[in-house]
Image (tube, rainbow, N blue to C red; front, side, top):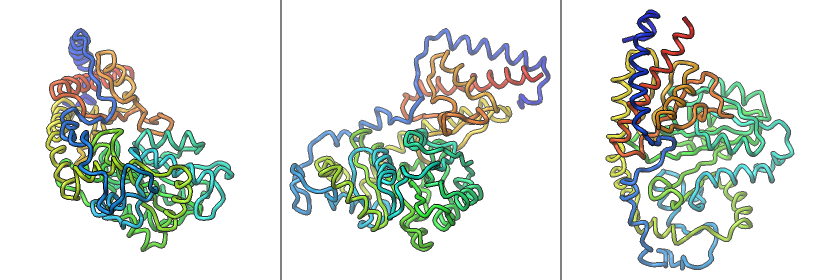
Length: 422
């Protein structure tokens, strides 16, 4: 039933029915949470082997991981990531447990010391950063805290709107970079097309120190068949812009959040420049944790097998959410949503002006969602429409209740908006 075609009397009747249903949910005293994309306890159980010490503290290359070494060790960890992700081993530096930490530090280095011989960004006024949105709130928070003006770029089914991106970066030297989650983007699950990757690599930028922050956070988090992603390094090398890209990845949702291993990859020049500063910042990252990763998941195929076991747990959750959205909201005209092939989220768009009301209604009834607006710079969704759904953590019975209630809230908020416009 397309609610947008109903008369005022029909809308009032629907509102009365929905209100009774909503009040029944409120009376149940629910306390459910779908606010963040956390692994479920069942997923974490798959990783319990990571709680054990590695069989030996001596690496394959003969290094004693208990002792001091350098930020470049262990080479075996870089080799694993190289083969798993198709990145040249000589581009890779291993970090600690957090790729977000590596991103923050990378931007801080360019702020303080500049990039490839250019002036430090901190000396350049009115610096800006492109933020494809809906997007990842923590990315936006990093650049906001570091003093960048955040510029929203619309997303398309192929990735950021490249017509907008190319026009902006060609004319404004104060635009220093762009955030990218190229595979199963947070929250829409969009996978960048080959054309998008090629245009990002080849576009002309007014800023000689422009950078692409390439956060391939979900690069191995497939729900179904893997979706191929064009090699950003290959595209940049072909375009003569290899120094443009900084690539990030971690095993935070492969093993344990807070207990994984992160890495970044970049051109040899950028790597050498980063290593000079990192060698002063730290003597080296946690080599025992790297050995733990290598002992539990020693090969790319072992990683892929592990991730397929995780996907088997996640698929029913995503399918429950998507089937419920279709059953309850399909054809109503009140919402649209994505059907991701991987990653951790489903993106839901309400009628314009209804996301905040929907989230508030859900909260009053006992379901916590990611705040409306969180997927946009400055937490301001110009259409007040986008809601990020995180199906991964709740048990399926709780997830079923939460998504049923969310659909009631979407309809209730939408109908109330339509009635106000009558």
